[in-house]
Image (cartoon, rainbow over all chains, first blue to last red; front, top):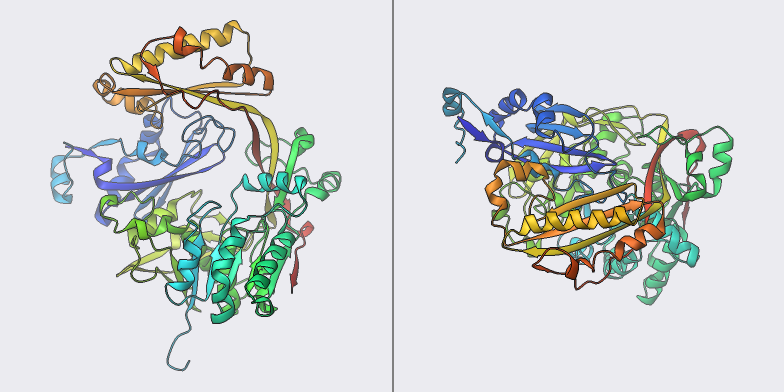
Length: 117
Length: 460
């Protein structure tokens, strides 16, 4: 079953120089392990291919049902140097939520995941 | 106090310079608070203030703060609310003098004791520090500061909670700092009230995380919150956050009753991950806090309990925020309308770039965005469903250039308007006139040994 990240998580982002951070937070605690399994560093690197110039770091925060990603080289230099509309990565988190996950039907039913429309 | 547990209420009244003017007064009038914490400084703010100070030695601080204090001082004088703010910028002494004038005007002069903290400004010492073997390397690039020394506008070390605690101990009821960390503004009053020791790392970390949760004002109480955003109540009347701290380092995040917004596990979590780096090591001058230790309990009714926080010793360095001149930039925009709005904007971008090439203008970067067609999500939006892009009613072409040559950037600004009659059709939205050339003031993060930074506290 296709599941939109948008329907199972919320997110917020910020900046540190040319790096955007994206915190992805499971809407329910029981959905957090799915995020840990599916939102791998590799998957996110793939998602942002062509959009960022640096690497992706990933950190787990089970206590907050959250993953934190650092996307390096995401902000055209960042801060005042950047020519981007989103120079400080304020809405970078929303582009992460475009991810669509493939979840086995049984598991999706068991977890009560909403199907992508 | 027997039978009750002491609770210290620290209220956030400003998340950045330019935040809601109503907030500080609403925080001291909306219910009981012990401290009002006001954060005015962002990375680039210091250089703007430095320029103001060079024009007028009495300037160089966040002037909004004086207006905010006029609204708040009756509560400071009458009810014992104390104020802690990093509004001093590069001139905390002048800031204190301006607050003093306001206090006199209100007839409250004899009940205001202002603590001023200095020592963070290392601009006058910069050459001596470089000569003494502090290279102030850029933390991101590794380059030594000597590369840009002649273009440096301001240099400030981020200072921690200790001098604020000292000012409170000396009886200040308004504490004005320069570049202290945002989080210290909240941690210091908790440390002062509960007598926390500076090497009790778990308590230091708890205070710092309390500070992180409320330092951006309403961003933890429903503002800019994606979770269930349609149902956030009454943002027009949003309540700013308050930390109710206890001696054991646990605290509750809440807001005044009968205010808008909301505080839940989700609103607090969104703020916790904001600007997060490695969550295991949130480095501050006071402590290295561990965000993976934070436990949240949603108590309902806009109350979230935070507990379980652990910390590790602080490092022997302070972060230094240096601002330097880094060339020039300009951004021009034009709006193209249906039919084929995006295609027209893309064609216009090609025309514009060809003309810039023919003029042999040199830039470090030329960046094109299509607002309304994926400016913030880039190709992630465009490739997901290309059909969306065909019927857009309009698209704004936004082209920016950046480089060391002011004349080249200036010339670029004159190439936008000609596109109206010499480029693709259905173009509008240029009423703003020629784009402005901006001087870029860039940020140079560095580290310096703690031992060479000495702060001074003066309470009067």
